[in-house]
Image (tube, rainbow, N blue to C red; front, side):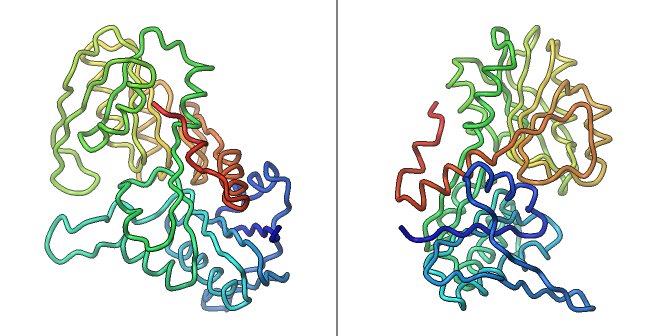
Length: 311
């Protein structure tokens, strides 16, 4: 069988090392050299000729993380790698998937074009903000789902007798419904109105939450403004407790302050992005085992969908 080579991007090395441990294969030797002006030059320090190469790098801010990934792919392509898969636990710019106002870019499509132009043969990612981004690529996309991580955690650690699920906005209804259907629980919706990015003008809860343990579901928690406001309103409506499941902890701006001062009992996230600081309210679950299984199944030409938890 063709050799497998796993390589870590600089900012995702913590996750790549864990993935490599589960996979049972050491990370490949790669050094990212920098010129004095900050320009990067990744150097792959072992042969990748004919190999299945996996580059593990989330593309969260700053944009250096994306640029580093593109350069690593180009280096492997020019070194005659047999098949290149970019493993992007958090796919940055996914919130810019359409023209929602005049004269703006469709940035997610541009990123797809860049990855393909660099030489990627396959993309593996988790919980895209907009699932239709898979169609921006003309190469295979393995879209892993965090339900495979969150559902076992809930079953093992949370008393689900009195639970209902909530979508913190209308766009997240489908995501939250996956959990409500799986656990045969009710679903409520928080309808919000924005006047500009990261600022909520108003919010209304649609559904009955009184006396319930509410679990909100979302893919990204950025400033945590939506989650915090939704949690506070849900508690004002008579809920017993509020938790939140959010795959990607972007946590920018006053996010930690918003979470700590909110009525959220627990925020459960994945380690697709490293936390900037600690919080007693934030619980981090690892994606490493799921990604290692997906990488193995890809290499061995086995099903990826077999790893999903079906609702």
